[in-house]
Image 1 (cartoon, rainbow, N blue to C red):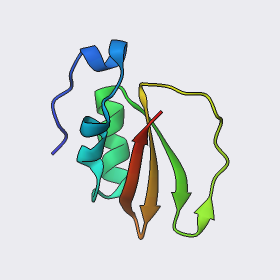
Image 2 (image 1 turned 90 degrees about the horizontal axis):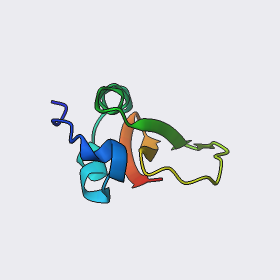
Image 3 (image 1 turned 45 degrees about the vertical axis):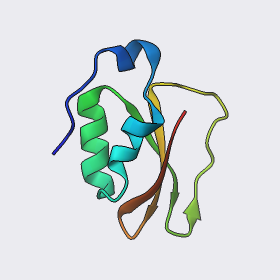
Length: 77
């Protein structure tokens, strides 16, 4: 179940604690939920494939690493 959105997240940014709610979720479910919350979502690593990411920081974005379809690491930025 997708958590309820917090309007201040769009202005002040996502907290690491909120982002970590997605740990253990299926990638597709987490991405869908992030979109509902208005968060940007990007994958930095999926299994053995590492993706090039820009170095810009966005407090409204989560970066995830995925193993076997499940989010195993997540960070804000």
